[in-house]
Length: 208
Image (tube, rainbow, N blue to C red):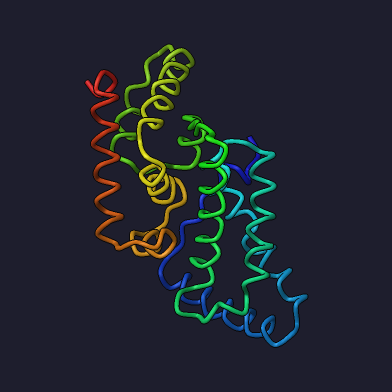
């Protein structure tokens, strides 16, 4: 699988603060008329946006199109960016909202890849337990498990799946997810808790 589809981007709060400061300077240059600087932001965030969009759609062609669409929307709206949040969370919000609108419109089903979850180092307690249950017949187990995971995740609402992906796969904090999804941190925690509970119930046969 292409690395851009599986890479996670987890950094320290200090890294994010430095990144935010650098981004503000870049955005200010763009807003002042140096539009070519936007290419710097595209190169910086292209893989990150591709990753989160791919994890939501599991479709390479759609991911490429939606990533491009997200950047176009960000460029057209760049004058509206006032720095109240980091550029990182601002453009993530654009990418997530663009993807969610696409999924709702086309009613795509989201299929998780268990192999990708392993590569990405997912931290969910549920997934950690599932990983520990791998038997000697690993390929058969993983195939069956992936089918069950797909079925279980499809019972979750899009909002619950979104926070799971942003937290467990993309490594975003509760605060960052709240900004991306435009809800409170309490709502993010509640959705994560509910989603994990539901997965535990639906995958109980694998958690024994």
